[in-house]
Length: 314
Length: 305
Image (tube, rainbow over all chains, first blue to last red; front, top):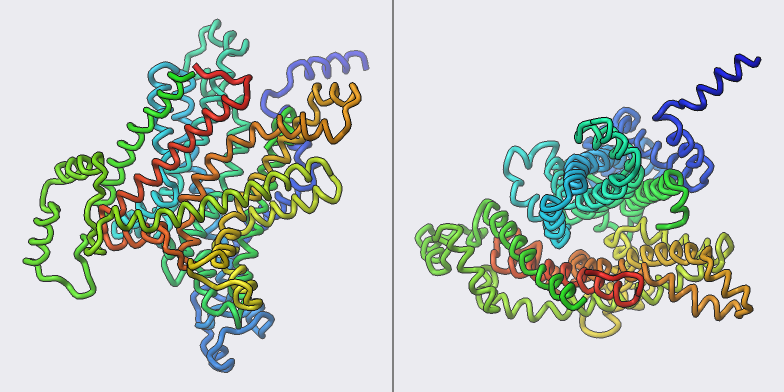
């Protein structure tokens, strides 16, 4: 037993560098009820987005015209045979269209955040690490982007490149992703810079410098992994912002092109029938609401879990 | 301090300059021109119109001309509403948009801050749940959905308010609520978190232990300190309300300037689009500086140099 303890003892003294704090954070996360609710919603959302078209009862663009005709050329109400959430005025199955919309929203959620990370982290890291003039220049650049009226810039960008091959990619969605990402990276850049500035002065960085580790390695191996927490939180909380932006654009008719429909364009279509067929607006609105709530809860939970000091701070 | 404030305000100028360049060139990258109509104008007419408005010049000359006029306060002619100048259009609509934005701002502050305070004081009890539910609904409901629901319920079903237009106070109610929904939620969440943070501070314990009444501790120590960080989000909120109202203006048929933004892009009304972008960018940049300065003023711990 005695020898065993020493072995365990040395293990404790040299824990795996990556698993410790992250596993602890995961433990704190699953103890937080709201965060778990968020996690479940997000998991469902991802499932719908990835497998939606496989589980959808109909292809999203198929028109069940007979059923609509039998209903006096009106959209089918929920709980109709073959159409559990009803159809739109063209007989397209609402559930199937919502599931296809989920795929669009999932793509928005991840592609936009990828764009934001790809632009924001390097710029923030450069500014924070080098400081001085580079820092000044890059931070002034974020000032300019920050002053841009977001949605308006996205609209301009989307319209300007709509006719190009770039604008046609992914049913017109690719452009929207890039546009939302281009105005959204500022927060992540500022956060990364702040993290780097505070971590730069720590002893472990000084130690790394003293033993001659290269600048690049210090930034990528030591500073970024240690400063990840707040960036992960910002990225998670940026997802609902991106989903909302896409839905808003789709509502005013920018972005995804028919016959595909995002949740925002479903609401725009359903609005015409709001008095007689409110389900055409309500179901997409509920889907949007759930997605926004899920990521917000998860983001809040992650913040508390990753940085217990900040608990409760928004 | 004064030098700092001056520098911050002066910095708005290069920001606006950059914004104008990016927008100007992007805008001219949009295919088509301001003379595209359903019925095609003859080429000769288009050429003459282009010459008249200087659109036949190289783009950098057009930019220089625009910038020169802009500095003198001339926003140029509207290419779509040919009988009016952009100055007139902006002057007509801007006050409406600002009025809507400010009303929504006042509503969000008046509802959001008390909601956050009550939530924090009744932490994990009834008030907290009520307030948290309100903010969750606010965050989860896009403004266009909220507008539709408000119109269907309060305008169509109950008939309390008109469905659209902007002719008097009863027309203001629904758009203001629709616009304020999201900021109410954000401000309430922020205030609640800030209050909870302050509750744990040593000076609150001191205040309690020296025998101050709860009410005095809350009003004199907690709320005053907790509201300091809340100020930081008020600037972006006001900017969001003034620039983000165009969807609400569209849905409720409000004659503000927001409604012109999308039409200006789709009709290539260059000078109108530039004017709107500059106005919005100025509002955002200006409000951010004001908030930073205000923050230093109300929080003596912060000193800029």
